[in-house]
Image 1 (tube, rainbow, N blue to C red):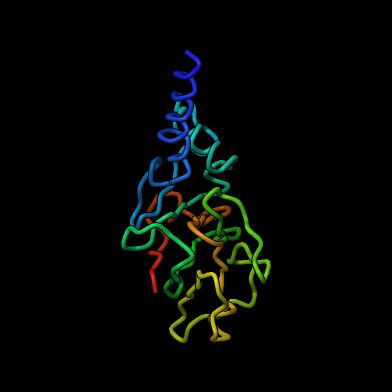
Image 2 (cartoon, one colour):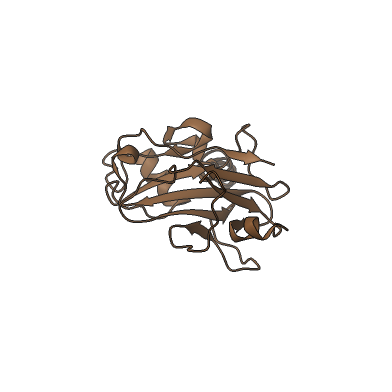
Length: 190
């Protein structure tokens, strides 16, 4: 009986718990492999989403306070990994529409921050040194090593070793976010 319990615990960890770290396994699937949930902090009897959020996110605010978008995959559907370089480009006037602020954060495969050379774990509204392209777009460079170009380096989000995830948080979101008409752009592999 003891061996059966050990095997059941291993099986549950592999087939139930570990997959909850992959956002594509729950919530609403959005364009470009992003996902979100719509019942933040009001899960009711949605025990699956409540458990998934508790495992992968710990805590979320109400949707009128903060809207969360989660990403594990690049535009082609491949797992985000530090062996690659990526960009996230917001078109001119295409940054997350918020009354408060927004941020794009990066986490390791266990959804923790990992020390990096510039102590940067997110970029967004708070970064006053982000550089726009001549067309008004904003490109975030997600990669383990610093870009050589100073303009790109200002927009660098250092990637931790191995697989990682991106979270886009929109604080005090405007209607295009809350009604679902705005979603994040793709994460492009370079």
